[in-house]
Length: 116
Image (tube, rainbow, N blue to C red):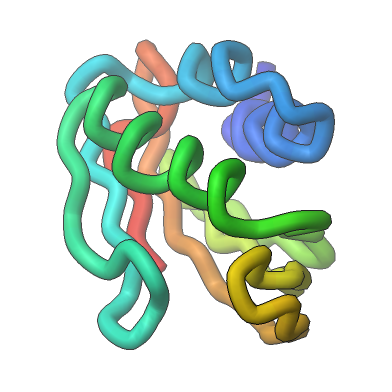
């Protein structure tokens, strides 16, 4: 499996709502950073904090949230993904669409770090 395949498989798992499969694409020592200004901003380390601090929060607070991977650029063990987030915040019923860029460093055990 190529590094791009690893990244694509995580987006596919997220799209299916399969959080276990998504987490399985991550290195156990993953560092996942969400940009300042984004809900859930900060750096999350290890599977449990990424799962609970990012993905379970998104599932609980957003309806129809998608992260669509449109372009990827690979160089060695780094993959940069460009795409679009879409979703509706359940509390306010306000929707948004916005571009994203995510830089992922991969390793033998999956993502080692991911930053936005």
